[in-house]
Image (cartoon, rainbow, N blue to C red; front, side, top):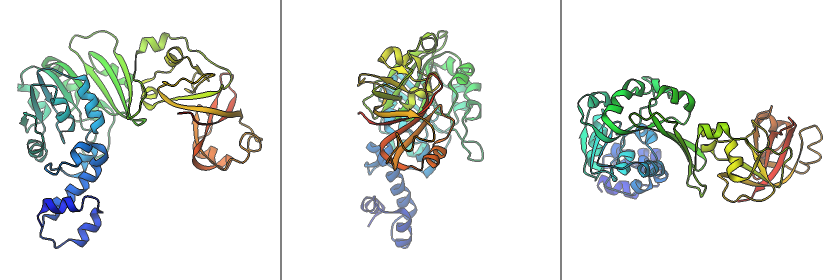
Length: 383
């Protein structure tokens, strides 16, 4: 049995058990186990790659750090032209999907193993450069688009968030990047403070906040030389049917939000991309909903808004948070999913106080209304 066949026959097996059971097998076990583990991770992350038996994958960390297929395809939808450079090639997921929109692609990566794997895996015509992003930028010709996904780990392997702590340091390179490309796309940590980043970066034309199944995954900053206007924000929640929302910070700032002092028939919770992007007041204007409090970021309406970009609930009841609530609104409730929004107690503290176990059918929202009344809202999913 050769290594390739062994991998195919054991794709669904536990890697640790395989290592013990087949320690004397006449196959390259180190390679086989690495490929099996990688494919199991990529099955959900990059499904079109996980089933391709001809591809080879590196150590676990590169798999962990790579983009998902969904986010890579989204980035590709924003970029096109003749010449493209991926300055931080890595596993090559982003490079593969983006490069399909370009005539010429340069893959730049300082890790020699990853360069060798990219040459083996990436079928699109491209040129491999085994050097650092900084080195490459000093001699490359101008191109249409440069993509940069700086490593978000320090020398000790600890995760970093701020731009200056990533490798390469984009803040030191941004002037040169803007000289070398018509458009620069930066992929940065979803934990990054967007306002702070906009003060540090030059010529930001667009900011894309990308969530997948309501989990914020990426912040994308598009920089265009000489751009001096206000950036446009796009908040998108992939793997859902929710619409993307585009706006500017000025639109959000100048909008007069609609409020409701009580909870109506339906309750709305914006998706993770909107929460990260800071689109709050505009939602009342665009979707005909009312905010429950300036800082609560929960919304309500009498009629169902089908295309609201977030979770939608039908309200079963609500009441002031007091000692009697366990005998009134929550009488008989033993399990529920609990969320707190602008509320003095954490979820753990509230669950302990109410003596309610975790559940996934009934939803309890602890929040504050416009009149500063602390309430519990009982609801079930409407869609």
